[in-house]
Length: 191
Image 1: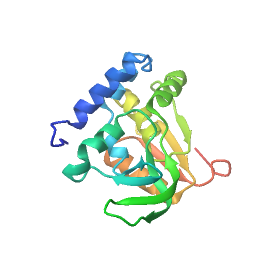
Image 2: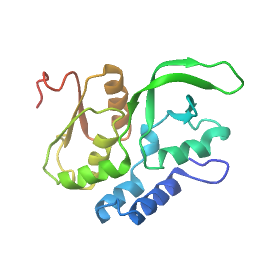
Image 3: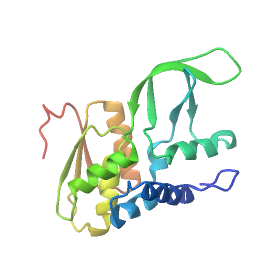
């Protein structure tokens, strides 16, 4: 994917890895490889960015917002991927009112948690709160070179059926071995 300025998702990933490493937020070479190769843009086909007290929706589908969308995806901070009660505001710009319903975790926090978890071949990891699928995807991406069985190394639970379905389809399309369950993690009968 390229925007009119020549920025590609691949280049944005490399720049993000460099920026995070320079800030001391990439724990080791294995996780740097994940940052450099994990397609975060696939988990943010659309996101909401603040414009003062309002929100603008970016999906990278047109040249006008492609560069900003890529910058937001790879900035490393949380991404707002769902807005509750989104209502279009009057005016020439496409702005909305609403409140954050779903936001991703900042990349540095994912990296610190996943490094501490230390997922290795043969481990099965349970993620509670799948959301957009980034955390489960990063773990599956990290373990992909070592995967030798048909058992998915990641089991994820999401209470929101729409989020669960969207994330499950996205993870499957990208080839990540994640078993997704919809429901309350405290009440679920998990493997």
